[in-house]
Image (cartoon, rainbow, N blue to C red; front, side, top):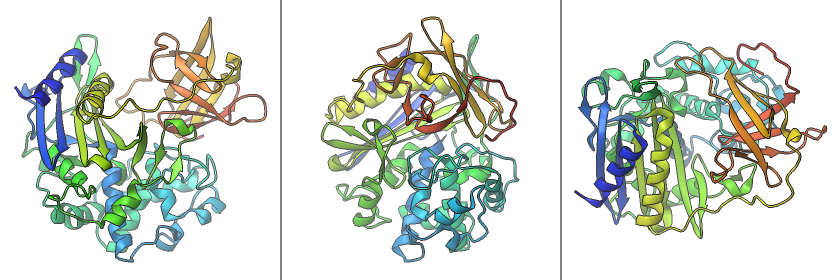
Length: 459
């Protein structure tokens, strides 16, 4: 048994997830390992060549293709989005005019449509059919003012790729990215995946894990990460193309352009928690910057970590739904710190006087979700619910979470105070409450006190 195989098997056993597959790129070589099952219903084993839905890691692939068009002079990052999509209408016309291409791939559009999912049909028209839905959503902030994780920006980037190339998004990816890099196990459809060993997502149930009832989210959000299926080896070949230190990797972009993608663009609203480049999320580990991204699918979670100055990277996928996170935390520590030798990640500053818990009371709203924070004895109660039927499909509302203030702006899990903060308050709404909560890399605006309102989707 290899050391990597042991590194994978032990967290799979401890976390209880059905299965996992991991790949490591180091010293120009790719090493892979897997453990457990790809599908509990069929009993098919997880193997190193098992395919999986990579989820939002797709955003880095989409941006790489966009940057190839930038290198060719076909797209300008600082040009108005309406130069390429003149039909674009947002709920705020001034925001539509101010939006530039760079905002799309730095999570800084400000548009309250991060999780706007709709059934607008499949096929090459799906992305174009989704864009008009933005006319009905508002702004969280002015374009470029903040970072707030957004699927919508990357869907628009995908639409620009379609317009500029004259090709559907998946066709452009196949011809302009997969083919030049020699990727043979990357695809977009269940019809293709069924010809290979494919991991299926699962969720924790009362009597163990239950297979997901759905396989893939709607195609309209493909550039943000709903349909892309790949393998650990293809992913690490792609990642290697971003690392000049890996001389054996094929290249799609110049070293200058991959450097631009990795470079700092904008801090997170709480700077100690990270920053963003062009699609890459950036975390500080001592003097090293680690480029990261996660990706969720129905019952599956993928994570990638890249250390550019070491020429090293890893990709991991587990098919246990939210129960996959302890596995990923163990794998990140085992590979980034124990194997690659990085120090622990820089922790956020939690000093400063703690405000009264009532500062956080209120109703917070973003597209498709409503969050309520209220008293819960010696703590705060945080309750989230889905307000959009498509977003909430095949999902239950999360159980309530007990929180306590920590430091000047943090909220930690009351029953797990050793864990990193669950959320942060950002800004002030003029009444002594935060303007936003920052959680799951997203800003969610406070909309008032805890008065129940019915909503079918937007804010």
